[in-house]
Image 1: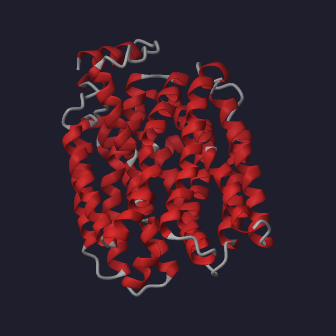
Image 2 (image 1 turned 60 degrees about the horizontal axis):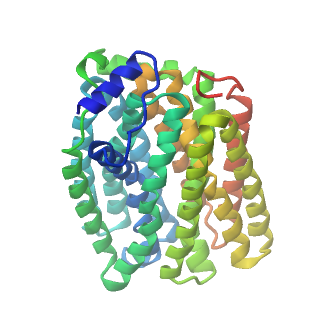
Length: 420
């Protein structure tokens, strides 16, 4: 606890805290592991059941487009819930709200397992998401409690590399659970993950001491989101990440049907294709962590959004013409997804640097925009589903171009210290 508190006090004094000294520092390793697990909840809550979507469609007697709305419903709860947890974390500390969120996650996951219709499933997914987002938004704020500027982006990249194990294994494990048991067993597995993570959080030190907490009334804290929305740099970073998340969740919602239903890919092989994208994310996160202190968040963010836009346009052309068949979808999608390593950590760290004293609220707003865009992306794919990959292609193309425009037009070349 003393190590964490001392780094927080150093940050308050205006200097960048040092990274955990060595892997032998048991506390630093434990904190890193638990924060990675918390940040991975957004991925594992959806990725684990992706291979079961076609099976669930038949079991719950629903149309494919409706089952895709279980992803959109999750994103609604995830985006709006962050707006509540952020100010609560700034006011009451990080641990308590995270624990409360995990309890809601466990209840929502059990409800999903017991659902008898697509409508029930969507409702429980919303509750599941409201609980899951507490850990995600406040884990990011905890990183900002301890680190600043490009160092925060470096730590976020490290965390995202570790947490990428969840989406890497999620579809593979989900496919195996589906083969050995049933789609309900996937959600009971999430119940177990939630309980295990709750126990792990009890070992986590509090990173926001009482003297640094925001004591203003919750309603006033919520109203301050309007101030953040008028801040051009915050909106530039949030917009770049938000458009990209729209494309990512279009990919998550659209690929099970494009790969499995349209091209006949077995559910187990789908997990391997999905895992290939996660490997790309891990590689670019490692590269970002190495380069960000030298090149800065702005340059790497713009490079990532340019790569995302280019691959997205190629994807749209291939989806429209059918050129390349399955490979014509997989290759540009893998390139698009890989740009996560250059976009997400830098967009979050850049926004947090603008208002470090309100890290919880900024993290919540950025997260709400990110996942709110995901609602639109996955919702568009579900709404315009026509049995072909074309809706996936044009949605991803629009989001890639939007991310590039936000990074180039709204994020200034000169940012706060440590960001250039």
